[in-house]
Length: 196
Image (cartoon, rainbow, N blue to C red; front, side):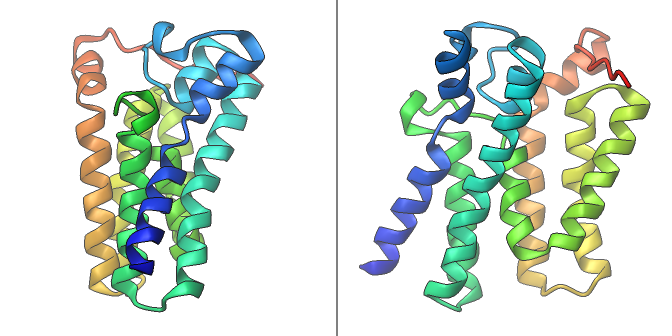
C-alpha cells in the first residue's frame, strides 16, 4: 500500500504544470493559448519570457529529481525507483491538472536522470547544447540528447534495466516531438535565436 501511495504522489508531483502556473502568475498568459500551445519550458522561453522559461525548466527538472531521489531512500529496489521515475515523467506528459495534456518530458526526464546518473546527464546536456547551437532547433536538440542517453549509459556500463528505461524515456520524447519533426522537415519549425 505504501508503494502505491508513493507512486500516486510521484505522479502528482510530476503533474504539477509549472509552465502554466508561472506564465499565468507572472504574465497572466495561458501558455496553452500562445506560441506552440505546449505547456513546457521551451514555449515559456520562446513565447512568454526567457528568464521564466529557464525557471520553468529548473522547476520541471526538480519535480523529476526529487521523487526519484527520495525513492532511493524509501526503497532500494531498482524496479521501484524506475517505476517512480516513469510515473513522474508520465505525470508531466499527461498531467491531470491540464486535462492530461502536458509537456514533452524533456526537463522532467533530465531531472530523473540527474538522480540516476548525473555525469551522463551532463554529457547529454552538452550534446543538447551543441546540436542547439548548430541547428537552432530545441526539438531536434532534445531528441538527440534523449537518444544519446541510453547509448552513453551503456558505454559507462550502467545496468541494462536503467539503459532500457532510458530507451523508453527517449521513445516518449520522440513521440511527443512528432509534430516538431514534421515541421522541421517542412521547414516551418521555429528556431531559437541565441544571443551572446
